[in-house]
Image: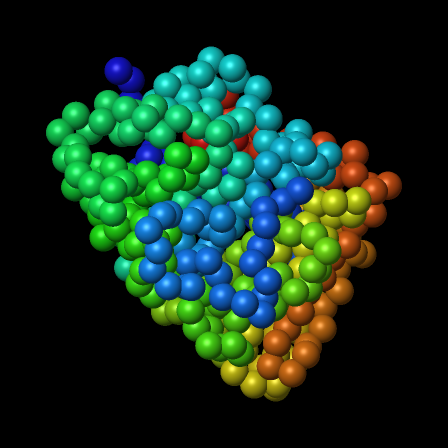
Length: 352
């Protein structure tokens, strides 16, 4: 069997997702059911005798620095993004479906990527939900790692080979990461153990996520992301993207309804640092190089769409693009994805 793609099975966020998020962010620099903001998630209501996968974010264990939640079902339906997600290479798509045990273009509806404090050296925690056969996903894992050990955790099947593990949470949801992380996700589904959303109101990533969700309660986001700006991330981006020392967290949500809305929040140490960062971001967005780059990508319609403001110790960025620009933005995103994907890239848009 040829070498399969290194995506969800190997628990690494696929390049296409990162590129799509970058493209949408650059353009401006349905949906799953959310638990009420004022109540605990299902996984936080105590131990139970069955797995609950109704809220994937509630299954994420503690120790996460970066969390990306994607509603692929909504993105596939949206005229803003559906063209960018189409995998034009049917043969490659079929090969990936065999290697992964599911069709990444059509079968995954919701997916969560969580990078723990162990950083990029460790596998990313992935929780995927959709219309696939768990048995086929498990068979693909064993195909790649014939010596994988098979076990049970709270009645769910787990497979492990070295640093990579796979676990079935329910008939429609599986998770991957290290074996300890897979166990922790399954525990969360049964209401056991600490989770990402357990922090107290007003502090931590959970609080930032709740704030982002509250920005548009009538809809759920197509993409929701929160990031802790730690030393490891600062070292990774280096001089390419110098980050203010006072910047602690960044969150963003993307909505693809009648309009395309991107809202981002940066949390800093104090009001002075937030005001200084808001000025820097505004200068960057209005620079001729930025305008030229957006024009080269086919995103000129977005040049005037971005609003930046300081709000206490936070910097807020909001971009709203009307339906009159939908065709050109959609075409530009599709072209970006096609250029990055390349004809021989085994991790095309189907490998979510």
